[in-house]
Length: 193
Image (cartoon, rainbow, N blue to C red; front, side, top):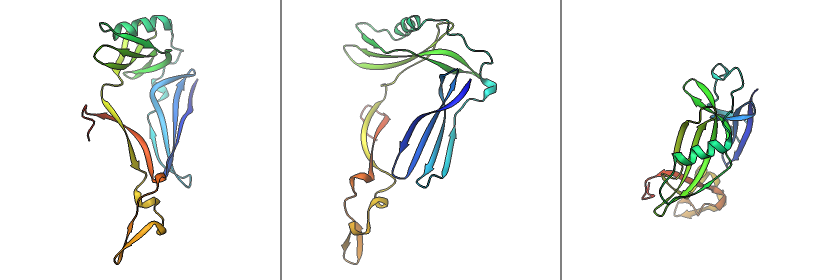
């Protein structure tokens, strides 16, 4: 059947976030989720819905006729490179949105190293036809780690931490808990914003 299952919960200083994954026949639907954002009093202030309406889902169970071994072989061929060393991870049986419907698929993750670079390929293989539905290099854009304020530096500074500068008060150094460590994705190769 069709279900929404809690996939991840994220707590931050200003809010909590619950991400629900949409599943069909106990298999996840790629990028189909509902995110619920709650303030610290537990009140919902935003819901993001990327779930697929039931009318677009198959009425009968899709067939995963292709074996996972054949899906791996097809994914390897799709990202092969001369002199590459490839590590393939266990494929995930899932549903992949295709136009106005979903099709059975395998998600295959491959770490590939060549003498000149490394990449992490995510390849979706149609579980009936063996065709490549999608492939992308997850490392194609640079990423970096950064510490950001959550929600802002003054929200976490107590009155005692404010310092006098003449007739005004100014904030001192924000406490460590005012920061959140995040990964910045999609940066240009220079890694500068």
